[in-house]
Length: 245
Ligand code: IMP
Image 1 (cartoon, rainbow, N blue to C red):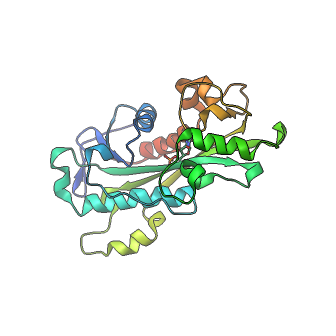
Image 2: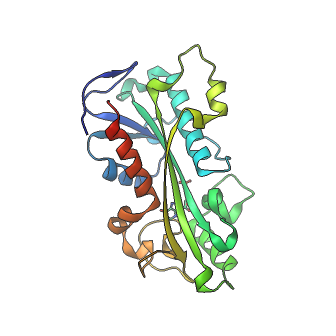
Image 3: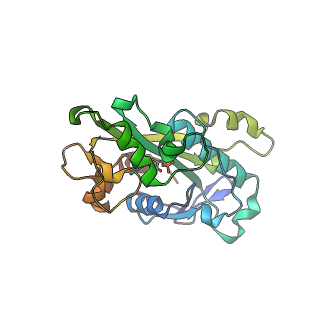
């Protein structure tokens, strides 16, 4: 990737490109850093404690990822002094991901994080989500337990945000018009009981196609080569390679 020190509107690049990632999940940040490489400096929501909490109520992963990225970029754009303590991010990045199980008509899908407590906006503990999944699949035979993880990464370039006089309502209503989205999927199946200690979420129940171990048994190094998030981030990486920044 070619890096230069050009200005992008008011948002500059000083040799290293700064990304603000809409997460507090250090696991995700590490995965993103590992795939995009050292030319990027990552800031997270921990660096901006006043950042708005975005309700993930879209019906698609792309809708939620774009909503988060645009909301955060808009907030940052209207509060330029927030970046006094950090380099100004040139891009804001957000992801949304989850598990689709065929025998459940694609559930838990966008509700993956709060599967065991769908009536609440709060996430459920992984053990509860996994317990509910196993319960629902109790009578489903192995050959019908096919599933996939999906991930969509949304990217907003700060320089692409409309100027101060534009109404933020226009793009907040349809965030997918202003964010670039990149998706990835990883096919596999759900086994009958948890196995392995690595990873998070549904990893102990998910065996990727072509393997006989769960993501939680395979560990980060292998998972990062074949995961849904790795595939979406690889597309993002290609996109950055084509951008002149
Ligand atoms: P979010 O993208 O952080 O909103 O995550 C949604 C939920 O999907 C997580 O809380 C997990 O339950 C599940 N999920 C997403 N990616 C993975 C993964 O790589 N392994 C296991 N579970 C995942």
